[in-house]
Image (cartoon, rainbow, N blue to C red; front, side, top):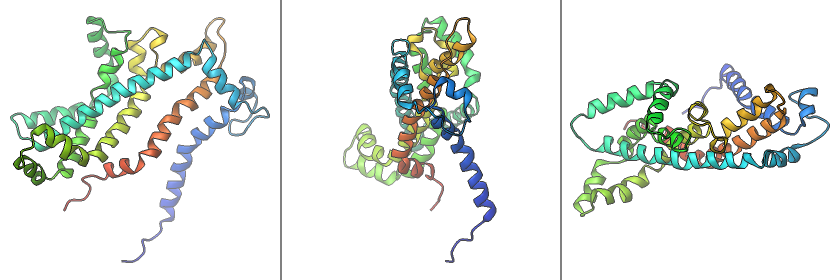
Length: 282
């Protein structure tokens, strides 16, 4: 086969998308090195004379008695329990829908597709009213329980499991006397690893960046995630007698995206193989 042709137009478009994607991150990194005064008195995409990154990080973790650390741990809890639980349920559901036949399977498929199409913001108010009735608002469960449901993750695992797990392999395990539980954990689950990591990344990003649901569910700042806490700091300057701490908001935002970048870089090979699952039919 000959070498693929190079497209100048595609290269230019890819470069534009790359710049568009990286420019906010570059601005965030540069702005995190500035003081409160430096943010207002210097060019946004270049450093100020006073390099204050380490001072900003220290002040971010100590401001208001170290509440940023509490928000970070809250977000971590929501991700571990919420996103982790959503991934586990998506793997179980996707495996069952892909490899078992039962009455009503077509109806389940329609419900899953419909749930994927419904934006989460449309469900926020009904969810709040339901949780308010049972007294779970202003508690971590009001954020964790809705995060356990990921229709897109379920659909992705459904498609992946259909292609990744040979039916003959499952039948061989059953002939050897393996129970359904053992077949799932020892035979199917290792084959589902790329799809599982992909779903985990999607649910982690969704839960980590979740803003609207905690906004309507939580009143106690001690249960805020990072998104809501940084927004509260950002709005301080607009309140009577409030202190402007935009340098801490920017630094906190930088610290917030670092774990997500690390997760994507560390799990990139699994993520890419998971996205390509089912793209080639033999």
